[in-house]
Amino acid sequence: MNPRISIDDAFWAMMAAAHLPGEQYTEPPGDPGLFGPDSAIWHVHGDVSAVLGGVSGLILGTLNEPVTHGTNRFSDYLQDPIKRLGFTASFVLGMTYGSTPVAERLAATVTAMHQRVRGAMPDGRTFSATDPDDILWVGITQAYSVARAHVAYHPRPLTGPDLDRYFAEYAVINEMLGARDSPRTLAEAEDYFTAMRPRLTVSEEVLQAVAFLRRPKGAGPATRISSALLARVATDLLPDWALALLGGRPPLPYATRAAGHALVRTLRYGVRYRMIDEARARCAAAPVEAVS
Image (cartoon, rainbow, N blue to C red; front, side, top):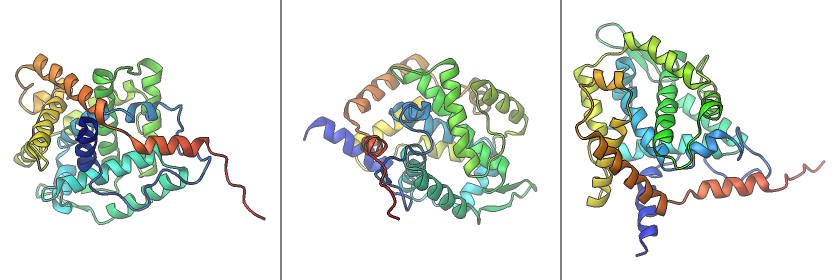
């Protein structure tokens, strides 16, 4: 089999194992969606380096223990992590590249799914997937981590005001889900984490979640080896303060980064983002005029 096809098939078997209802990229003609082809978020999310950031964001997100506890109680991701990854990718890609009505429908679907996720930990700390603070935590850990991966591994990384534009655009997604005052620049994101750090804890439950996220996944040996490497690179992308909470940086960071560059080059060689091609065609198409 053509190696590009093999890479593409293996990648999307992981990333597109499940889809949220309503995810599509072709309709309506002429609708640019929330952001459009010239946006920072199209540029950032359209490269495989964003996947490294997504996994890094999941690891970073575990440090908010009530959110992790709520996820463990109400999600089946431990039993079916590939399905959970598929839903997450479906949401992020749909919000980024889908039309405006598609993005609105996906946000409403996820909000409805979150309604039942609420409760309290044994120590009294509460969690709720509809709480603006918890929504913000989940969203900004993703945006911040994807931005770090983008700067480290994208061949044409955004910097300065252009990277800030990415945070401003991702804030639209966070706030459509119910977050308030989502950081709109890299500096604001850094300030947010500085304010949050006293509230972050590492418990046995957190360490178990981190260990699970780092564990090899997939059916075949090549996929499992690649996923293990991806998790190692994603861990290396964590900020120093998060690594300190988790026990320090893994050994051989330079070898890890060299392997990370090799991994993204391999994926970039084979992976095709068909939804971006469909979205570009949709944006370029003439809108269909309503019949009066």
